[in-house]
Image (cartoon, rainbow, N blue to C red):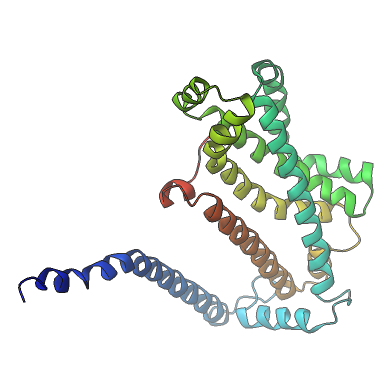
Length: 287
């Protein structure tokens, strides 16, 4: 009896300790969902109670009805959501992939050469300070109203966050680890692949998170400037008709696109950074 007592006492403690983080996460999600329900209820009943004009702020039920009509339309209907969502999503994905890839590759080259770093850093700072929204009309003028101009705008907007955070990540790698690899006669590529790149991944993903949010904004800005189709064009058409509920339904779709992109990046980050503590892999990075 005495020999079995410690095991019998310890057995229920381990599962409880293992489930504690999961319970805390579930509690946080429950509070977030509850807050969302309260805000949506306040929106619905507040607009009706105070008699807010629908062209200023429509009730939530009208927005949901407009969203339903847009989703119930034919996938190829020009007044539906499916066709415009596909076009905008194509611009976002292509521009995000191109801008992130170019930014990461240039960051690798710059971080490996002090001469290039000193040479290009002033130009990077100057180009980064330019308002991308002001450049959008010029890009549309150069490339036309098709898909290419919107992809170029998204690429330009997503390029700089990835570039700057990646350079910061490569520069922040522990020098002692690099010296250790050199003492083991590691090649330059081995040092980069085994030390620099894994150490810079949290910074890189911080830049990708910002780039994902900016890519949605860039696509809509490009469509506002000049486009034949897309969610930005749909917003302009609805605003011209004072269809505020329809505009809000497009905002819901854009929010969902941003959430999906962020969730995909989060899953990839957790997969690649499983060797790091959770708080380090998910925390924000300041540059």
